[in-house]
Image (cartoon, rainbow, N blue to C red; front, side, top):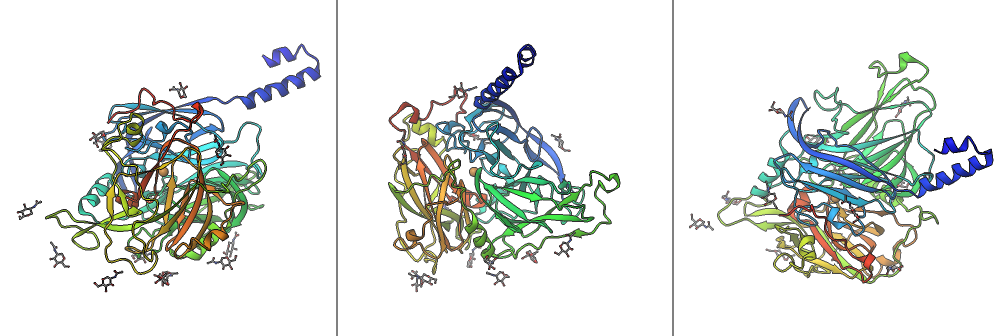
Length: 580
Ligand SMILES: *[C@@H]1O[C@H](CO)[C@@H](O)[C@H](O)[C@H]1NC(C)=O
Ligand SMILES: *[C@@H]1O[C@H](CO)[C@@H](O)[C@H](O)[C@H]1NC(C)=O
Ligand SMILES: *[C@@H]1O[C@H](CO)[C@@H](O)[C@H](O)[C@H]1NC(C)=O
Ligand SMILES: *[C@@H]1O[C@H](CO)[C@@H](O)[C@H](O)[C@H]1NC(C)=O
Ligand SMILES: *[C@@H]1O[C@H](CO)[C@@H](O)[C@H](O)[C@H]1NC(C)=O
Ligand SMILES: *[C@@H]1O[C@H](CO)[C@@H](O)[C@H](O)[C@H]1NC(C)=O
Ligand SMILES: *[C@@H]1O[C@H](CO)[C@@H](O)[C@H](O)[C@H]1NC(C)=O
Ligand SMILES: *[C@@H]1O[C@H](CO)[C@@H](O)[C@H](O)[C@H]1NC(C)=O
Ligand SMILES: *[C@@H]1O[C@H](CO)[C@@H](O)[C@H](O)[C@H]1NC(C)=O
Ligand SMILES: *[C@@H]1O[C@H](CO)[C@@H](O)[C@H](O)[C@H]1NC(C)=O
Ligand SMILES: *[C@@H]1O[C@H](CO)[C@@H](O)[C@H](O)[C@H]1NC(C)=O
Ligand SMILES: *[C@@H]1O[C@H](CO)[C@@H](O)[C@H](O)[C@H]1NC(C)=O
Ligand SMILES: [Cu+2]
């Protein structure tokens, strides 16, 4: 139409029209429709074929692309024998909690043969997030990238990349993970560790018989690439490095950061990190491994310490002979840190800062309405009568807790029971604001390591400013816990090792440009302080993103009350919301 009209108009009018159309396009947000069919697929990894649960038969699953401001409708149809829910990790879900996804928190599962349309808008976010199953351990294979493009005409606050590539780290078991986790829950012991890590579903050349299953990143000399890194592994924080190249961090958890350049980065399960990789200016006549391996302070042998590698291949656009992977070229490997290199992790995380510019401000709450102190860590539960358990002793099972409470999920959804006023007998509203018993959290572990169980929510008034300090404990050993909060981004205002000092530590808080994210590590034997604005009703899950710890109970839920204005209330549930 514009062309037809413009041909009959003088040039200035044409320009004006083009400008107007651009403005209209910019203002427009669209609805994006996705069909996600949950179905099994047979894939071969580590020389063995295995039937896995997937979306649309893809592993990893399809990339969901939206532009800031768009509405997204994902119709999920469950064709497998397992119950299913999907979570849009990091999407704020403003007033659309029904679409958040954690099973028995915001919804009952989508049962075999049923479907459910996840309906949400992408508001005030741009960057990389991801989606994953949020029931049992099905996210082992059911996950994919979410790419949120900036609004039309809005550039990145960094150099425009030549190409953008999602790079998803995963974790692979030869065994069936659902069988594995149900057995672990029966015995009270730790589930078997994984057999491999993957990059975009591929274990790569460092595992036996996997050379053909290798992720290859093809680059051209001199070009800049945006890698959208996602740690979708279940239980492992990962170091990542590309031989002979540096990585410039530009965004984490779909929030821009002040750029900085490293050789090695660390990424925890649940987290996303956008990095720029600049290809060498000339064809280097070499190939380079890009590798990831775990960071852990727990006992060697109790975590998967293998290394996944992909290959960075240079393609010379002007020379056909040099345009494919050549085995005869030298292959360089990055030097990954030792598995327990906490110093590097601390260095890296201390460099993460919000952009804090007028266009991308850091809206850190400067005053605090509600202060909370949570201990996070492991513990035990007594073995059922007459059973033999495989916990730390044969009379105990492994457990984990927040403020010593191991959350028991109800058999209906917390949000539904809240919304319908049927919370009695489902949950209590008395989650403790601090630990019931104080001890030297990072000193000698108390003799009684048992946790309590319960289904308790912590109630927040609408729009309260919250400060939460999360303190690791040494019970059964210190460990770093990536805590993920649904429904909000938060600012990481402080973190240190040892016990939190409520008098002196707040004086060192960064209230100017702290990093804003949705998943943060409680450092091993230390604490982290976060602040957020509770502007999103109603029920929001918070949990360790190490799946094994979530399973043991390192999880809780917030109840953010509706505000008084109509636009401060949770919308009514969609008619197809699954029932329990
Ligand atoms: C996977 O393989 C099994 C055994 O070979 C077969 O019975 C099944 O139909 C296959 N499933 C799919 C989705 O191809
Ligand atoms: C999605 O949610 C919006 C806001 O509640 C609603 O207006 C719209 O009808 C919903 N769309 C579908 C397909 O359910
Ligand atoms: C890669 O780095 C190694 C040292 O880490 C160096 O010896 C080698 O020359 C480099 N190769 C290229 C092609 O950059
Ligand atoms: C991985 O752990 C096993 C068992 O503790 C150990 O034998 C092996 O050397 C470790 N490998 C690496 C690469 O650290
Ligand atoms: C890391 O692990 C090695 C081998 O287990 C050990 O010798 C070393 O002391 C550990 N380093 C730290 C900082 O814990
Ligand atoms: C941490 O960073 C400092 C300053 O950049 C550096 O001197 C130190 O070696 C780093 N430590 C580790 C463990 O990487
Ligand atoms: C435990 O075993 C004893 C002896 O076999 C039996 O009498 C008792 O009923 C059992 N208790 C439970 C709770 O199963
Ligand atoms: C449990 O452990 C104790 C002490 O280690 C041992 O005496 C006992 O036989 C064990 N019980 C079972 C059922 O294995
Ligand atoms: C807590 O335990 C640590 C490690 O044993 C010790 O260094 C510290 O002094 C203890 N703190 C207090 C307040 O007792
Ligand atoms: C643990 O028990 C031992 C002896 O059983 C006792 O000496 C010690 O004081 C207890 N420790 C704590 C922290 O209660
Ligand atoms: C919510 O709180 C923030 C910060 O305290 C304030 O700026 C904002 O106006 C409040 N919004 C509403 C709707 O009350
Ligand atoms: C699926 O979910 C429903 C509703 O919560 C539950 O009754 C049923 O037992 C679950 N089925 C399986 C196979 O877990
Ligand atoms: Cu999550």
